[in-house]
Length: 158
Image (cartoon, rainbow, N blue to C red; front, side):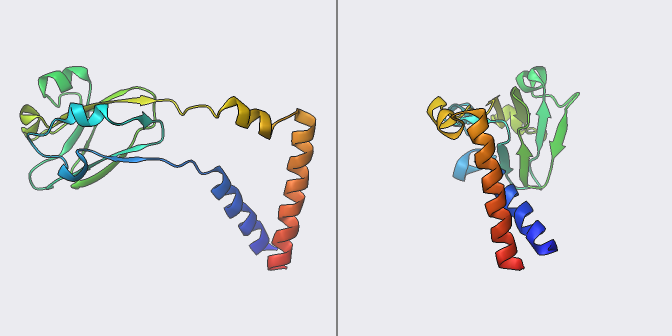
């Protein structure tokens, strides 16, 4: 019984997982001086739930999340966060503009990037209509599907 509940929960979790993208800053060039990160960012589309990751020599560089003033002036005063691992994964969890800079002096050599994070797109209307032709039929399908899933769980795990 416990295994069937676990199976159901795992199946439900997999069914509701959204694919997040990991945007590696600078792609194969990483987080280093002399790279046009504005060009890189303009070729990306960032959505809520995506990650931005920075790859760099941790003994030389770091990453700070700053406001626009910090970004424009390459200052880390009033920074919102900082990372120093050399392989930093940062979740973009809000619809907003984010500003990242290197706080070890690299910002003055171009190590800064600004990205705009968009809300998740809505599913196409045709997909919504196909999934939910009416509330009554959608509910009955859900109940039947749940019953079938439980029956399969018990068949597999007893």
